[in-house]
Image (tube, rainbow, N blue to C red; front, side):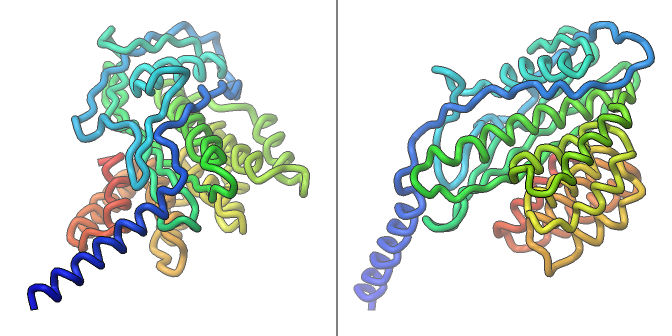
Length: 332
């Protein structure tokens, strides 16, 4: 009997190894990513903003310091050097803030208030098999500390792509785009928290018009335009975002759900809960709704997040429970 068990164990091990090899087939050991281009999404301000100096403190725990991990291991580099998460974030956050008309200097190290305490900044990948999409989850979480309080800010972006000819096809959608969006989202939330700035009604109208130009926009352009609506911090975008939460395009839909949180649409708490609690929908819709609830930051929203944390901690550990808890932990 022991020999039979041993033989079965060998066969099982061989099958697992073969499955892993099929997922990793042709995957390189590293990728060179592009630096995020500043959006230039201008905010309306009553008076010229004086330059603000931000301290960015690396407060990540050791288990959060691996920038890219998952089913397929690979180093992410800018130029010739692996990405240094705090330096990368400081540089591109500063560029994004300046491009929006908010003069800022972001320095790694403690230079005083306001402080951006970096808790999480990493990309996690997943792929079920060689015929499924290569998927990335980008996680970013900071505590924004001022003289009066500390506010937790979270970012979660999901993106996927099936490589057809080579793995080089995944770099733009699953690394470059999420990194760019993560920086833009963090910038918008920092500006909203500190200054309450928003883009003009004209900017919102222009984005909505572009989205309504049927057939003239690629999937990526629509996806970015929907995210941009959320980055305006202007509530005039909410009705359009609500409509797009049921769009047939997955990534447009995810961008709309996320943006309701980014924009602080507290009146849409019930809608976000209904999306999250709809077990017939795909996990990423529900996950993004949970992320948006965390973004709302109201007492009701945070009570809900705490309840969900307790629920998922009591479930068997699998992909859904693990990934959902990772989102919740961005906010709690």
